[in-house]
Image: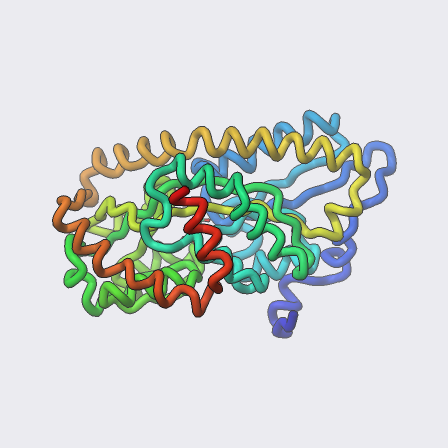
Length: 335
Ligand code: LMR
C-alpha cells in the first residue's frame, strides 16, 4: 500500500506501529482494542460497537479493553482503513461501499439497486456463501472479517422532491465510495460525488452537493433532514457493514481471549441486527414529526420508473465487481 507523507504523519508514529501486535499481557495491563467508526453512538452501528465493548470486557474479565471512537473522532472514512492496516486502530465497521481500498471491490455488489427484496433476504445472503466469499477477499490485505451488521434501506434527499428519475437531472449527489452507487445515480441523470461522511452535513448546508442517500438513523443523528427539504423513502439500495480487524493483531491474541471476543462479537452482531429495523423506523418517525423535511413515498408507477432506470446497472456492474460475486449473489438472493 502506498500512502502520502501527510497520511503517514497522521496515522503512524512509533506508538501506532507498536499496537499492530497485542501488547504483552502483564497483570493489570489490558489488551487495548481501538474500534473506530464514523457514525453516532445512537445508531445501530454505534449501539452495536458499545454492546461489543460491554460483552468483550465482561467475557475477558477485563483482560481486554475496547475503546470505541464514534463519529469520525479519530479518522475519516478513507483514513480509518489505512489506520487499520497500519495497526493504529484494531477494529472498524465500514459500509460495504468502502472496501475497494482494501482490494475487495466485490463488496460493492451488496450496494446494487434493489438487490435485497427485504431484510430477511439480506440476512440469508450475508450469513451464507456470499458472506464467506466476501470475507475471504480481505485476507491478502491483512484483514480478517468478523461479522456483517445491518443498517436497513437507503432513502435519498434534496431540496426538491425526487419522485421520478427526471427529478435527478444534473443534481450533485454525495456518495460514500461505491462505484455501484456512482453507476446508479448516473443512470438517474445525477452527478455523484464521493465525500467523507463527516463532511456531508456541511456540504448539504452550503450547497457543495444538492443531495445524498442514507438510512433514517444516519439522517437524524447527522441532522441531514434539517438541511434537506425533501426526502424520498425509496429503499433503492441497502446499507450494511462488515466488522473487520487487523489480522496480525487478531491472530496474535491468545486463543482463549480470541474465543471470548468471538463470542462477544457474535452476540453483539445478533443485537445490532435485531435493533436495526426499529432504530430506523423510529428515526423516520422522528424526521416526519420534526416537520423539517417532507418525506415522500413512491407510488407504484413512480417506483416502476425507478426500477426501469436502475436495473441496467446490473449489466455494467460486472466490470467493477466481477461475474463470480454477481452469480453467487443471484443464486442466494433469489434461491
Ligand atoms: C456513509 O458514509 O454514508 C455511511 O456509510 C456511514 C455509515 O457508516 O453508516
